[in-house]
Amino acid sequence: MTRIVLAVLLVAMLAGCAGTITGEASAPAAPGGPQRVQLEASNFKFSPNEVKVALGQPVEVSVTNTSSTTHNITVLNPQGNRLASADLPAGATRIVTFTPTAAGRYKFYCDKFGHSTLGMSGQFVAEAK
Image (cartoon, rainbow, N blue to C red):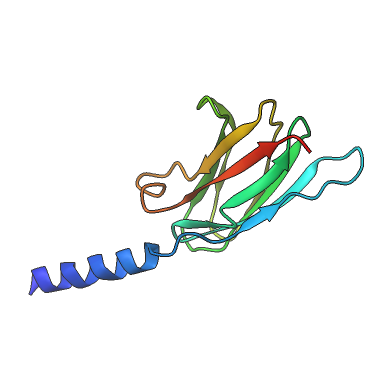
């Protein structure tokens, strides 16, 4: 009986993680201002999970946690160095900022144990505009 319950729970968890591609967006910017991005953090995903940003211009990321558990957003540069990080209590919105100084992919993910492995990650793609 225990094995059946565990199997059902595993299938449900994997089904919830399937389809983690949750869209692509571009970050609009007011002249002279930061690029503004809005992300939603839910159970094991960010939406959108890919955002195009302009190289050399500050990025202001507003992240709202719509789940009932604590999450996090951590942003890394293309070399893997941490640029920004904030914990996201259930129902809360936090803002992190960073400036992409080199073209490339800037990974963002939840640093809570196992969350990024289950699909809670994405990327900012910095390119010259």
